Length: 182
Image (cartoon, rainbow, N blue to C red; front, side):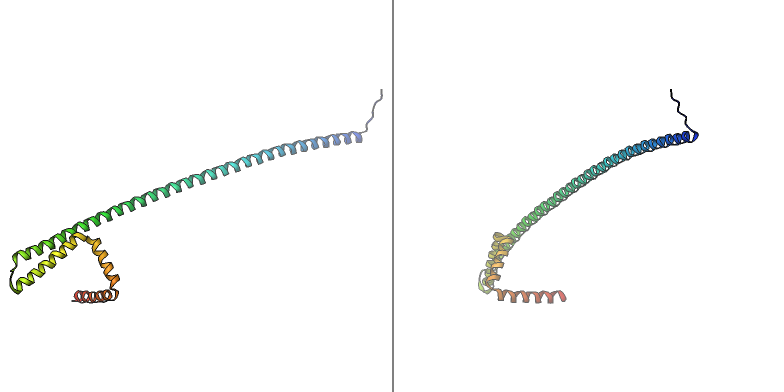
């Protein structure tokens, strides 16, 4: 049996060496644990980043849906407003045509009344007959053509006689200006 005699220096050296090994093991173990914790933290950060991306994407999609719904509502509202304006314009046009027809009928009736009540002979009878004829024909024209027919006829007359139309417009403008100044 061989006994090993170790000197106190050797024992101290062995103790220090054993302590260094334990410290190395503890540092290595601590480094491994820190690495594991760091990796777990990185994984958690990746998960949080993905969750944030998912939330942002869902938020953007929701905002897009809301904007689209708002656009559709605005479009529907504008369309309804357009339809209502078109209906009102059509109704106003029909009312104007009806009023024009009534005015034409009234003028025509006035021509008949003048013809029946005015003298039939002499210069006054001739003038009354001419006025009655003119009123009857004008009333009939207004009643039958309405505003749209009169506008078409006026447009065609201006196209056929542009210079005369401009002169008439200037004269009417001058007379209206004089009448409104007084």
